[in-house]
Length: 232
Image (tube, rainbow, N blue to C red; front, side):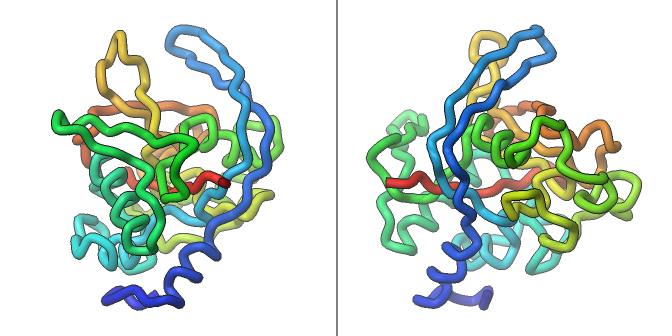
């Protein structure tokens, strides 16, 4: 994709990288409090790759990543950055924005009302990562992920490892990915969830059920995001 501008063909290109994820259900598990809960998943679209630096720059005119490369995943972006990107991308493509922002800078999801780009929920993320399997990892770690033992301490171009059964690349390793959800409001307030493991994590850190959290303004060089769209 040309990193300097978006045209009609770019709309097609971005949407062609969105994979259809069928409906189903998944059991999530919080090891911290030994709690399990079942979530039903409505079919949706999930990006084939994490958001890359060329796409992020084309939409925001910003280049925040420490490890530069047009096809490397964007990193050093906050949850707020990711949500704002989704709205900007929706606006650029003529879709209705998925998120509303109040005067108090509170983000509200317009669920059931928007066809715009958004962050996946953590249930959608894990469901997409597992791709119909029950295992915590969808392949042999060195074949599917950039992690501590093979990353050379940096991110890598997306799509260079093997995808899962639903054609999604880099779901594990390379960069962690912000999700929409609040982690535990009673304990951590506005902290949001991120998933997937990154280039600096050992193999045990790159598993489908692993959950981490941080403040929505948090930024670090192994944390990016992936976009989704609801099916209307």
